[in-house]
Length: 431
Image (cartoon, rainbow, N blue to C red):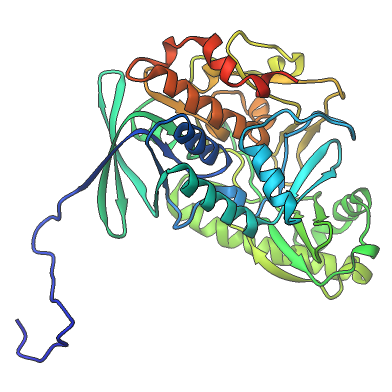
């Protein structure tokens, strides 16, 4: 002990030995708090299950909040009169944030989208989690997955305040990178011979929306002159939020590697691309954007990195054909949107009456009885995944996984009564 005075309200502590691991248990543990993870956690809690929701960031909301994606895509069928495909918490978000003008359903390029205020959405997520009785654990990264036979028994996670072990009956991998499946040693998939590019989203303000060019005009100018400003991507858009002097800008392509040092470098590169984008807008459309400035940079928007091997591999052919599976748990009409090259992307739009389906088998991890994956890391080929990884079907997948594990209990998610599950998901499967 140092021979010096200390404040009377101070206690001296030091770490002499390995501190004990804090243990917590629940029925269902959800890892990842984006659109699919929040949906899963809230649905499982409302079904009467105790739920722990884990996220690596210090706040909830995942990419929907922190990457400032700005719009819920995939909620509707194509066309200006599109019908809503996904319900559950999607209904509540549209209702609650719509009442405060923080959600606006607008006609997007090929179908309706729900534009949202990311700050209001973040608070909605926190309030919904609290109201449902979900226990959050933020700033927590997976260190190990413990198993017994075909079951995961617990997760070991690291936090800035110490290590935690979470035991649960069922687990939902909503990490986006299949982190639970990967750390558990289950087979996963990566894109062969390249990668899928993400986007650095940004919010701009102080522009003249009345003089903003059309999407087609803007895309044409990017193709013609984007290279002059050092822009990697040769397309994109600036979508104005109705009634607010802000726009969501998506004109970048960023690499999203799994190597941790590369990932850190690329997120800085993404902001540099965003700055070049603003320079382009200033110079090419001065009447609309001459005074525009960046209000916020989102975290890197990741489309696809690593995904599971499930019991069904959803294919592009099945998406195009609108194959309805016996174990269908969600539906979607979003285009095939493949961002697999630096300059542009594939955009294959479906007719107004098209619907494609997601089977439970694409969520259930081969070899694991109590693990489901949801969101952008389900089992599908890259092109098929591009059409179902948007937030509408992600919400539906989270809901389905929660009820599948609720029905499975201490048994296998591979052996549940599919008809009983589909009865719970009826409004996501039928009009």
